[in-house]
Image 1 (cartoon, rainbow, N blue to C red):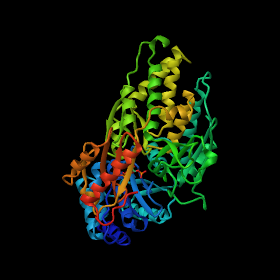
Image 2: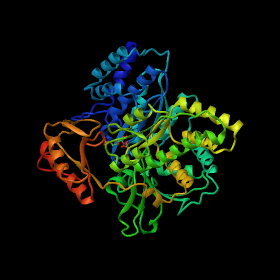
Image 3: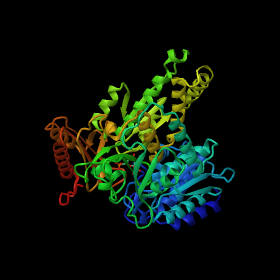
Amino acid sequence: MTEEQCSLLLDSASLFPLPHGVTFSYGTAGFRADGLKLSSTVFRAGVLAALRSLKTGYAVGLMITASHNPITDNGIKIADPDGGMMAQDWEPFADALANAPDPQSFVKLVLHFAKEENISLSTERSAVILLGRDTRPTGESLLEAAKQGIKGIIGSVSLDMGIVTTPQLHWMVRSKNMGMKASESDYFMQLSESFRCLMNMIPKEITVKGNATQLMVDGANGVGGDKLEQLKTLLTGLQIQVKNTSKQGEGILNEGVGADYVQKEKVPPRCFGPNDIGLRCASLDGDADRLVYFRISKINCSSIDLVDGDKILSLFALFIKAQLHCLNKSESDGLNNVLPARVGVVQTAYANGASTDYLKQLGLEVVLTPTGVKYLHKKAAEYDIGIYFEANGHGTILFSEYFLSNLQKKGNDLASSNAGSESHKAALRLLAVSKLINQAVGDALSGLLLVEVVLQYMGWSMQNWIELYDDLPSRQLKVKVADRTAVITTNAETKVVQPFGLQEAIDAETAKYHKGRCFVRPSGTEDIIRVYAEAFSQEAADSLARSVSQHVDHFLGFRTSQKST
Ligand code: G16
């Protein structure tokens, strides 16, 4: 970098001073904080994204969102060239950049890191960054800060994709780098075409139960509802009604609405009531990367039957298994070329114990990772078909390139030898699923379309899905503590290593309950400790969560103001 470039970067960094008394951390899903305190972080993330693009030689993405967090928060996530989360070995550098105390030390860090990573800051190559934001009021000014940061690395180009869902931006980055069409309308086209293809292959003899084609969706008063309104105009065979879109006056983002609220509180979102009893309903989160389903109870319309990420995963796993079975029925297609597929299922410690048992009974390999799509996605990518979901509704199905190319070949063989056979249809279905379901990251919109088509394919009502297995009663609480980083965990967050003695206290409480299971971990997106408990009854799960929260407060809290919600 020339002296002139350095001084330009220094000048622009001075326009975005670090706020006082805040430490930023690239947590579970990027930086998150009060939106008004984030401009220095976003500016610096713009510089970071440009460096990442230069290092990899491909476009990267920068999404401004705080997803499920309150409307006053905001945040920033960086998407790598493959559309996934930024490589984890860059996170310490992201933290260092975000917390550099002044513009001089910030520029020094940039130069030092560029040297260490062998990144040429000459103007020969240019970085390309795709920018997106959700509907938060601070989004527009933060986007400007990001653009300034990107400009700080001379020759870098930012492409503003406008207001988009987080998964749309990840999809665009991946598509662009694969040399494919990458606009929003291309995204809608790919989803609607693969949905149509799957719908057209639903066996005629299947009679669909219940309100099979009718779906009510809670858009969390965010970007997802608006995008679904656009997408639904391209769909046939499904009637979607969206409530809680981001239109003025409908309500506040994530307040009493959205997938996080529905899943944690187990109640219907705002604007859903007696008229929706018995209907199949879905809820997205603020940036539409989470999806849960629910049905309002007939007995008490303030309670719901929740169908969370675990049950979505189970539905998908059943469907994939069935298609692989059909695909490899060699006696029916007369070919003897079985296509082996290593299928893996990835969950976190939040997965309901009943779901893990169910998946294992299906004969599937189930592994646990720590919370965070970045961990689950990476693990799922190790399989031919990796299905991952967090209980909170984040997830997708990944197909390896190797498997897809063999599947394509097998599909072509079957088209000439046995067109229209069950094996041939199974190959076509799996290929269509790989196009429908977002290969870059969990995506509520594409997940929703796959759920709908699978339910129709199976001829299942909401009731059939709910009855797939019985969830063990569970409870999640939040505890506000003085310093959440004081909790260190191991074994995919199922055991506490520090503070010393806390795990023994958790074990002693858990032992009091039949089928008891409990763990605590620091949130990476909120300034709290999360407590999860599971037991044979709801009262027992509530009581276990409460007593463990008290231990957390005793070990780490302010002592005076333990707050659980
Ligand atoms: C983000 C991550 C998810 C994670 C969630 C909660 O979701 O992408 O993988 O489950 O945060 O994380 P934590 O428990 O650490 O707060 P989102 O929807 O907020 O982007």
